[in-house]
Image (cartoon, rainbow, N blue to C red; front, side, top):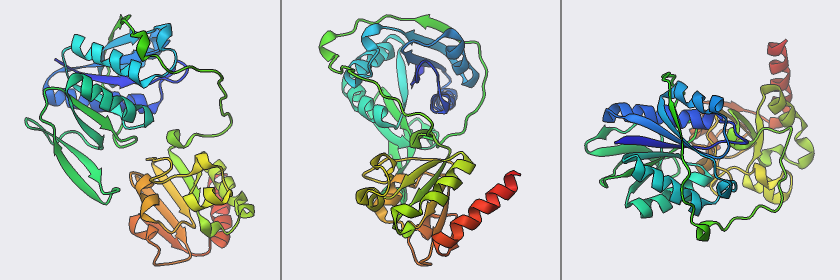
Length: 322
């Protein structure tokens, strides 16, 4: 019996997301009095794999198969299911990101496992197995019981602290039989964005809405993001108007993020937008309308014209960084 955690890597390197997953899986394993097995798919050096041991993974199954070089959710689900059966897994932990949302339901069918999606805390109990999650676009919380023999948990990003629990992991190389009929993804070209922090990786996000008034007024917002080492984002009306690129759109129909700090500038706080950012640890709102819904979700608020507040905020950050 073990807790299995699927750890994603990017060009052979793990990011905070993977360590967060292992930290969470270790917490679950302690509740079940068992150990954590991490699965890594792709070419990852042993030195990098050993980093998972810093957060409690006592065993690491490394799969480096050329057929799995491209992320194909069907093939990955098949491989993870095979490892889960091999390791007699009772709980599987996956990130609640795009790939996790595609893999979890496929695993559920293969393993006849119940799924707790978007979980943000350790289980409330393990017998019965009850998880805690946000619901209704983050406006409420739910306790969900998973009664199947195998449980799948998708962890909301940035919802669990990194907890060091150093062990010396055993690394096992595993070469599964990959069903060729499942390999339907073909990579024809790779174009990587450089020089910009990705929204899904950012600890700090500075986001603008229609209160920025036009595409010409974004310079101070971008400067603030640069000073803070933050990613830039926007509300849907802004991306629809073409003021900012669509990949910056956050909300229910855009990217769902959970940074440590989300600064909303000129964003009213429609339900659809809040659904995408409600898991942020801290929200700071700047809006000229004191009754804007965003203030109900924010821990800190500034009532004022963004065009006047932003330059002063930029100067204050510069002064602090001297």
